[in-house]
Image: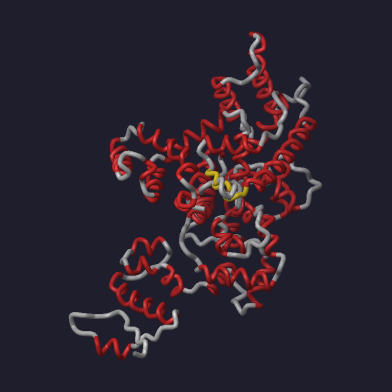
Length: 509
């Protein structure tokens, strides 16, 4: 759900922390051009941000996005209140809107999963032992663990409570980066060295997230909202290069051997089946660029071979619609990730609400299990999610739904609906449910306002000279749908050179 919509459905009290953070950064803006823009926005509310309209608040957020990112980054890097655990839940696909109870359930699941991983890590890598190979990964773990232990326990020598200070945390963060420790590895070492991971009170968790400016909490409905724009900022901070739904799509096209290479490099059990390995790869928050450039390949594979395989993956398996794939391995990876990240932020209307609902209804009629598949994949609370409004609020788009079907399932569905069952099946299906006239009708205000840029952002292309005729045609169709009689003969009779009416309704009187 976009920030604008969240602002519209929350009251002034529920927006208070977010607005206060924005005001603080606005007052400290050093760039003169940005400062003038900020001043212009705030002046519209007589100097008080709470009086500014929501569109301009969104504009203000965009202007100070980098400061907001730095604020959240500091909160995450130096918080000892499990903020990282909460955020891991919130940045997953489908978790941008949650009831208080559903957040509690997901948090309980996450803590249980992490406790098991932390315990397993301690058994697999007993860091108290001093004998291990100097070039082993365990040596890196031991270095970080010993530094953390010193930072945590040195306060005890001065009769103070053991804790890691801000200065010590900055050094440990740098050390973790130099040792290339993943977030998962850092968390396991931290909780095996300092305090064990325990669940905190739910209201405490919600309060921490509100005070950090991460969520909006609507008390009337006991619902948590985290806008897409803040999710994107958090993913950047966490190094999440792609949303899970896109990484899942990539993993689904890899060969079994490639999945096994990734799993073995990240201590994922070989006894798991393929789907379980893929889920564990998603859970660990691994670097997508590292997976694509080296992780999915056997050690020693030539760069040229890797680049060729990546080209094949993009062109044949993923069927990316891009002008060029790039020449080098790095360029290909950048193209692939750029393509999916552009899709994530794209607000273009691929289908109308009617078209999306029709597609969902026919998918459900074809396979009733698709509802549960969507719920389970995106961890949605609602029982029946086959509704365009629900899925759109969770930023789950038609393509995201179609990619949950296997190629054979999608081909069978296409044949059942008389859709072309060869070539790019996803695009064929989207095209079948896409009605351009309905898209124009949904954006009638933009057509009437001759807003070419707005139409282009919605994926609709029209010449300026055609707008008048298009608007007239849409008005007529809208009136006819309402059951009114549009009398073309009467319109032509009444029109004069100076007075041209778009439509005339004849009510029979």
